[in-house]
Amino acid sequence: MASSTVVHSPTLYVPNVPGTSNVRFAENRIISNAKHTAVFDYVTTWANLPKWLPVSEVAKVWKGNEDAPAEMGDVLYEEIKDKTRSPKVYTVVVLILGLLWVVSGIDEGETVVKRTVTFLTAPPDDGRTFFSRVFQDVRQYGPDLDSTRLSVMQPAAIQPGLKRLKALVEERWGT
Image 1 (cartoon, rainbow, N blue to C red):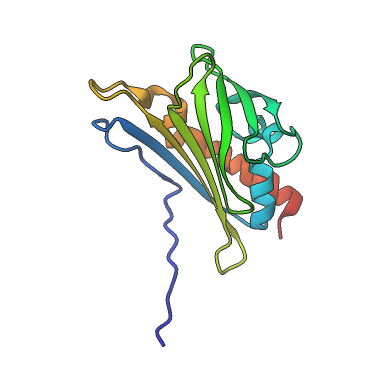
Image 2: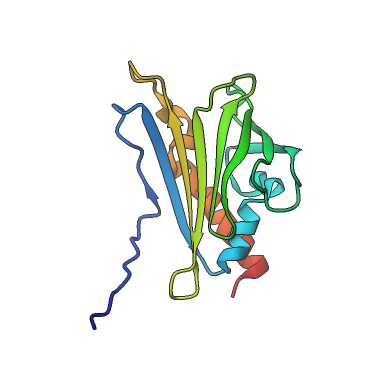
């Protein structure tokens, strides 16, 4: 029986989709020494968002519990640090406890969903936790709108937040 080897890329983030696409995404990932359930519970608790995500300034729960992991249908109102941008409203639309969490978001006052954010945690075979944050933004088809200027679309701007997240969860739940 052949053995398989898991190779972890040293790259901590993956660049955006080329600017010619109307779908933009940025992925950040990190490996933590905390249990994957602890990481999942921490990142899906609305009150923790401004503690680790560099673009988040204020998180207000419109539906759900501020101090517990968000559940299906829970709603967050988020003020971001860039005051030229509208506040965001996110709703949990996919939840697989301890593994996968997806929110759909709109700008305050809008009615059409234009973005999703996905959090994924997984325990590799070595006892650590793989955490990935994928931000997707759908733009109107046509001339390219430069969304790369938004810090949320620049993986290198978000990666310090994942390093902060890693430090926070390992300080509390690390092995």
